[in-house]
Structure formats: C-alpha cells, structure tokens
Length: 350
Image (cartoon, rainbow, N blue to C red; front, side, top):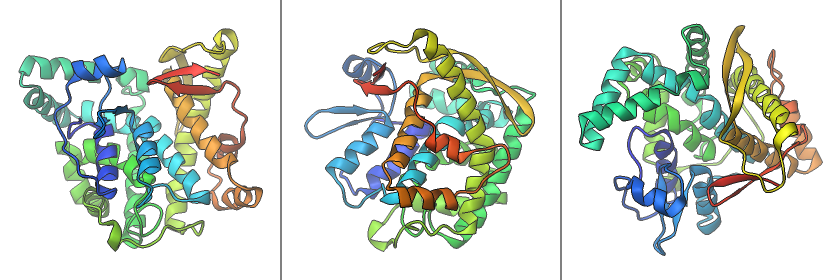
C-alpha cells in the first residue's frame, strides 16, 4: 500500500520490481494500517500469508532474507555504503525534498491538487498538505537556511550527473539498496513535482535517465557492483555526503546522547522527538528537532562497518574522502552509547 508522491513508497517500489515479485499496489487503508501496526505510516507490504510489513528499512531487509536473489545488498565495503546512502537519503535529504515541495509555490500548489485527487477531497488534501508543510521548521528549513540547502542540492545533482554519465547505478553496473534509498526523494519529490521536474530535465538529464532505469529494473541485464574499487565520480558524491550531511547527523547524535544520559532506561521507548539541536550547513546555523529514529538508522551504518574484517575496514577508510568539516571515521567508528532495538514498529533502549 503506497502512493506515487510518497518518499518511502518510491524507495520500496524499485526494490519490489527488482526482486521480480508479483504484487499489486493499492491505495493505503490508513485505518487498517493503524489497527494492525499501531502506527499510521506507509507504505506497508502485505505478504501472501497476510503478514503486514512496515518501514521500508525493515521491509527491504525482509525481502533480502526471504528472496536473496537478485540481491540488493552487496557484500563487504559496498554494503556499508548502501547503509550510508540509506541514512543520507532517508534522514538528511528530506531537508532538500521537503524544501523543494513546500517552499516552491509551483510545487506546493501541485502537491495540494495531487493530495486532493488521491484522497478524493479538496479539504482532506489541503489538511494533509498543511500537516506536511508544518514539518519544515522541525527539519531545519527556514528562509535563512534555504540558500545552503539549495547549494547542497545543486552540487549533489551535478555530482550525480557526472557519475551516471559513466555508471548506470550508484555502486556500479547493478542496482542496490543505495539506489532504492535515493529514489525516495529524487523520484517522489523532485521528479514528480512541477518546478523541480523541469529543473531535472533542463539541468540533470542523467539523473532522469537513472530514475527511469531504477523504476524499470532488469536484473538479468545488469553487471556487477564496484566491490571496493570506487571511481572519482562516486568520491565526489561521498564528499558532499561527508561534508554536509555527516556533521549534522553527528550533532543530532550528540544532542540525543545528552538527552539519553538523563532519561534512558533499558526497555524504555524514547519519544519520536526529544528536543531541539543546533548544527550548521555550509556556514549557516541550522536548528532542528532531534528524532530518535535517526539514531537507529545511524546505528545500523556503524553495525555494518563494524561487521567488516579489519583489512576491509582499513580499505574503506582509505577509500572514503575526508571532506572539510566532516568525519566519516567518527560516524563509522564511534561506539554507540545508547543502543536502540526495534520491536513491533517501536524503538526501545537495550
């Protein structure tokens, strides 16, 4: 159950198609989702046995376990990059995609009409749009931060264009979780919204070609992943992730740990938001909300890195760029002070 303009539906859809699963995409029944999962988040995937899976991170993990081929998660260092791109796309890039949807008048007007068409009610569509637009300050999107957000987006699109001019997918000649993750914001928001769709066609046609490849995957026609041999074009993308996203994620973690020092107990479910934090993006102060879920996603990146053998860890450290102001080593190697575990769509301290 998902919708076209949903970030996370756009992340899951190419994964399901890549796995070549027979499936039917239907309009979400939010009351049924709430009844069965306790939280009103989409998309969900209902298995032939009637099991309802929720959260795209968990759903894709389940697909990898149940249907291992064709695989979306590579081995070794490529797997860590998949988790890193998932963290970046899911937990940092919404500062871009929510800005472009709700702070460009052309995009907001179109999104409101799309929400009305989907819900069958102009009033419901506007209420949904108002709710989504209210999240901008929580993400750190303000008139003061928008120029820095736009600069990151422009630089990332240019870097992706250079990369996709030479390589079919993020990690080589085969689609991976990294591509699915980035499809969430790039397809559902930038590609489907009016103003940014024109911008992509005019300035980033290679990204448009990649989007179409991901939406219509043919795993039998694909080649191999990089398997640790990363080109300069990928290094430029990683420089932007490390220079802009990593410092903000680490500042968010520091604020979460300060809260957890006072409040964490084994078995406690932390609130979804635990207060504000301050960071910076390209020299501009950013104030946003500390979201507990981000900590769980960050923890998964570290676990993937720490599962590598020591020579593989050293190889990845050498391969990752050292961007000004960012530290991949801190992101990957710092001990997790307050470990979180997910059970039944909820997080708990363990």
